[in-house]
Amino acid sequence: MTASPLWASEGGEPVLNLTGTFYGILALILFVAAYSLVIMEEKLHLRKSKPVLLAAGIIWVLVALAYAATGDTHSAHVAIKNNLLEYAELFLFLLAAMTYINAMDERNVFQALRSWLVSRGFTLRTVFWLTGFLAFIISPVADNLTTALLMGAVAMAVGGDNKKFMVVACINIVVGANAGGAFSPFGDITTLMVWQKGMVAFGEFFAIFIPSLLNWVIPAALMSLSVSKDRPEAMQCMVQMKLGAKRIMFLFLCTIVTAVSFHNFLNLPPAAGMMLGLSYLGFLGFWLKKAEHRPGTGDQPLDMTGHNPDDHVEPDAAPAPGHGPAVGFDLFRKIARAEWDTLLFFYGVVLCVGGLGQFGYLAMTSHALYVGLGHTTANILVGLLSAVVDNIPVMFAVLTMNPDMSHGQWLLVTLTAGVGGSLLSIGSAAGVALMGTARGIYTFGNHLKWTWAVALGYAVSILAHLWINADSFTKFH
Image 1: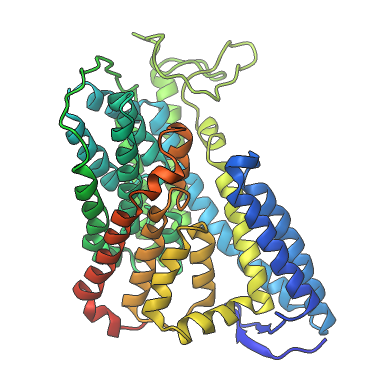
Image 2: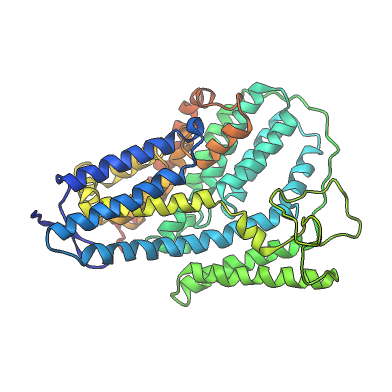
C-alpha cells in the first residue's frame, strides 16, 4: 500500500492520503454508523457514548493496520497519544466544572432561584423574558444543559397546562442558553476547546457578546408577541439554600479565576487550574464536616439543625455502612454524579475524529470547505451542520483541520458552532434535554415552526460580527 503525505499532524508526523483504501473506507462507514445510533438515542434508549466508544477503538485498530501496511509502525502511536492528551485536558476541566455544578445543585442553589421566580407572581410574558435572559447570563458560567433544565423547570411550574406558552418558552430558553454559552470559554464544550487550543484568548471571546445577544433577542422578541400577559397564581414554595451554598459559589468563582490565571500568566493548561480549584471544594467539605461535629465516617446531612424533611435529597445518595442513609454533602458523590455519558461520548468523538484525520479525511474536507468555498461561507455552514450533528465533533474536526484563518474567522466559527444548534430542537444538549422534560409539548415539530425566527437571529448575529469585528478579519495568529 502506498500513499502520499497530505499534511502534518500536530505532533509533526505526516498524515497519509488513505481515504480510498479499504481501511479508510471501513473507518468512515463505521463512524457514520456509530453516529447514526447517537442521533437515534432518544428512540433507541442507547446512551450516546456506547457506539462512539466502540467505533473509536476499532477505527484506531484500522489506523494502525493501514499505517503498518505502508511500513510505518510509529505514526499511529504518536497520533493517538496526542489525541489522548487533548482529551485528558478537556476531561479534567469538565470534570471539575461538573462537580461544582452538582455541588451547587445539592446545596439547593438552583432550587432556591427557581422557587423565588415561581413565587413572584409575574405575568407569562415577564416569565418568558426572565427565563430567556437568565438562560443567557447563567450559561456562560454553568453549562447550557444545566441552565436549560433549570429555566425549563421554572417555565413549566409557571406555565402549567398552557401549551402555547410552554412551546415558545422552551425555544426561548434553548436559544438563550446556546447564545450565552457562545461568548464564554466556559459556556460550551466547543468554546472551551477553542480557548484551550489557543485560537482565541480568554478576553477575546467577549468580542462576540453583542452578536450572541442579538442571536437570542431577535427570535425572543418575535416569539414574545405570541405570549399573553396573563398572570398565573403565585406559588408559595420557597426553598432555602443549604449550609455552605454561598461558599461553594464563591469557590467556583475562585476556581475559574485560577484556571484563567494558569492559562494566561503561567502558560499552563487551564485543566490544571480547575483541578487545583477542585481541591478548594474538597477542603470546604472537610471544614463543613468538622463545623457540624459530624463523625469522620459516613455522610450525615450538613445542616441537621432545623433540617426540613422536604429539603432536596441527592438522588444518588447511598447508605454508608452502619450509618443509615447518606444524604449530605460529599465531594466524591459530586464527582460520581458528573455527566459520565457526556464525558465518555466526548472521548469517543475525539478519537473517532482523530482517527479519520489520520486517514486524510479532514485534510480533504478542509480543502473542499475552506479553499473551495471560502472561510466565511465554510464557517456559516459549520453552524448549520451543528444543528443536525452535535457541535462537539464538528468543532473538533475544524480545530484538527486547523485551516489558516484570521482571528475574526475563528471568532465566527466559534459563534456559529455555538448558536447553530438552536435552529433545531435536536441541535444542542439543551434542546434534547428540554424535549425530555417537556415531553409531548416541546417537540421537534413545534420547534420547527419557529425555526424561521431563530434563523433570522442566526443571520443577524453573523452580520453583526462581520460589521462590529471587521478589524479582526485582518489579524492572523
